[in-house]
Image (cartoon, rainbow, N blue to C red):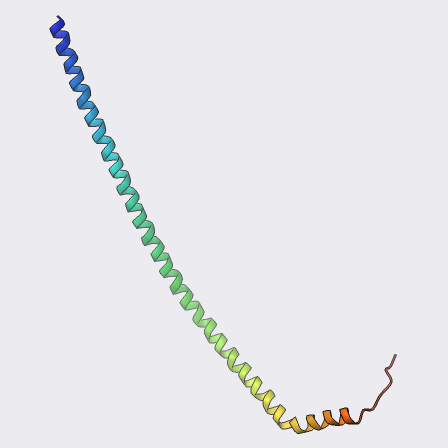
Length: 114
């Protein structure tokens, strides 16, 4: 009976060793699959990020074109106004200088109204 018990124990030990190997392989497979899933998720996230970045750049390009056109129009209007002011300044420059010189050299003091 002792030999039979030894054989039974040996069979159980062999089965336990085989089970341990199966569990180890399952753990390795699960670890490998988790890594693959993580890598796949990173790739999907990066692709999604690139897609959204492209959409943003497209949106920005479409909407800044309108801003650029408005900015150019405003610059043209400002340049036209500056040109008008310069023209008026050149036109009345002599009169303004003479009026300033007259005011400096011939002061006419006036009392301040209370």
